[in-house]
Image (tube, rainbow, N blue to C red; front, side, top):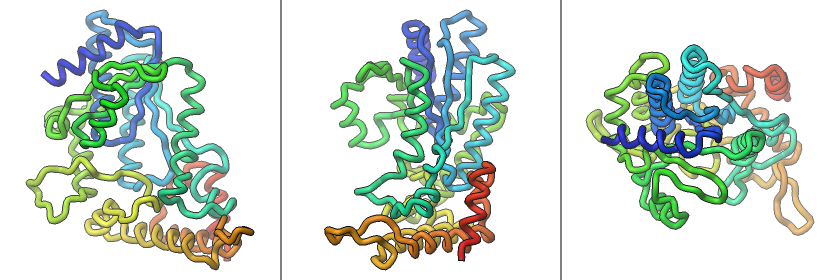
Length: 334
């Protein structure tokens, strides 16, 4: 029933807004994965039954370059599989995009070259530079579009309350001149996992077992056993995230895969550098500003020690010639 309802939502969207492109933000997590699955299933049926289709579907992965390696590798593999599958089945209808930070706006360039202190709750510059700006820049070029989102009311009480406040109480809604479609709005977390355990990935025929393994590896439930419910509150994200006070994701990964403990240690060292007065510039009013030369060198020293031990943590930098050159320059700083 839930799947049928979700496919009907996509049918209505394609029928009403067929002149607009669709946009799907793909993170590699369970909800965005299901949305991509449902959209591709709808397209398969639309081709066979001559149902309405959108003009284009843009699947976007905002690559911060520093997502936890276990998730980033999985996400990029799925992205590549979707791209190959869609080219063979749907021609140019589905376009896959990997968006990266603009030149000089990546995490370590901002810290080492420009002296940004580590992000924190009151100065969360990372979200804007690494994700929001690249995505906004891309979306600004495609005009009006339909956002297909994996948002679910079941995620949290606060989420449900905010959705009601914004008027997003239906699977298809219009907000601030934007069309938002939430095909799994009324799915519960158990529905999500039931779907993923039963179905296979339409783009490669594999099961979703690896995704479940990743969620279990990063499960934040204390003392959970193999049979307990997977929490919906896992934090997937950058291993350098200093916004969170306690990183249960890296703690859990470190318990299962000891080399991940090195990421946790390095992240905490970067946080400590920014909290140390001797590594910060002093403003005329007495407050602390950017990292000084010693602070920037201290951050470079952290990554120079980590890189030989865990190069996978820097794959995003190694894949780009310019960033690779920068990385090798930083790790050579004495």
